[in-house]
Image (cartoon, rainbow, N blue to C red):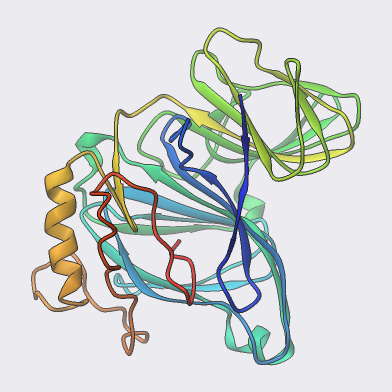
Length: 310
């Protein structure tokens, strides 16, 4: 099946193409959220400001093609996200983080283009302690298969293993494929999908345009062919079961979502032993809990007018 992206204007010149969750296909393996942000250009003085916001029971990864983002979190981490590198943040029982354009890039003007993903944690790992890991681009496996150039960001695929410590069976790769070249998705019984960043590709008899995702259905051939020179992301893995979504919260427990909603409504740091401490160096503001929509807990994440939670 083909999932067509839906454009979202987040203000300040930032447009995202939302793929997951989708009404007809909410997850691919453990991947429950997939946004392509940009390409965006910010004039001098402008930039992205995603204020402190919470997560639980998931891990986040932002992979940039262009630009830089300063990540800060309630563990005390302060790390630049740069093109080609992987920052893997495990929310576990709870974490707060912010994503902003760094001061030097803001002063001179900058571009931003990249992919944001959320990975749902298996139930046995949902409530682990939060953690953060940075992996520079030269630590990630790069290799070629039959004319395709690939880079393994997460998990296991094509006989390689990423150094990023993940919590479930998954894979996530960047691939560049010349026109006419074919490549099998490394699903091996797992769910798998192809997202086209630029170019065009064919999955079975279906053509996938830029900013759209093709999902390999169970039992179907999982080989894609580049119609044009194509830049794409491959992702998938073993399912982790049903998940409930409310705003930035993902969990296997609807009751847990109700509990964390009440805690975040009080603000970060409001409970000394709570899930959501303040971020050192970025605690002057935060994104408040959105007003209830009447749709209950199981819904697509909302977005704050001033930014997109990652």
